[in-house]
Image 1 (tube, one colour):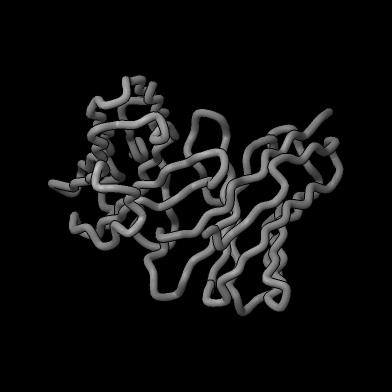
Image 2 (cartoon, rainbow over the protein chains, first blue to last red):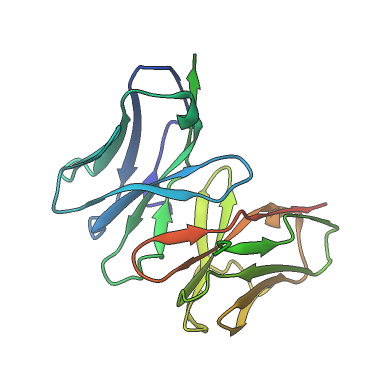
Length: 114
Length: 111
């Protein structure tokens, strides 16, 4: 049973506008949430993370918001750029596990149009 | 460092054949992970090693799957016999601390 869900398989956004990617989870034991970005024919690369004790983390154009009561997190990209076109994976970690033992969502394909 | 290196990049085989995927982690990393990506389920952890020792193989789907790490610089994932439902992209990743570094993956197609 998938504990991390990304219900939007794709998202199209105009260059310069905001991209909002959503992720829901079911396991309240998760203590860290991460976003990975993946280009075609490449492996995923780490983008940004947030601890479960925080509700927001910002890194340049990327901001992740966490709503623990709703078991929901989102990634905001502002402004969106053509190079942001990629698949974005939401992931979560259980405290007792290795940092690499992550539960991933199915991914959201983002297309940024000129 | 060249990063995590996987081979082959693409593998096409027939049902029933043995498939071996290979991975060279980043030098100095003490954790190695094998993930599988499918459209429906995204990335799923199959197995991971710490200092060459398998720690958790609960994600390995069946006995047809096996993984080894004979030394710190090499790991294999073997499927025998392969089935069409094994078709997916298989990623190897390594880490030393908190960040996970992925290889470019092996696209496996079982006909």
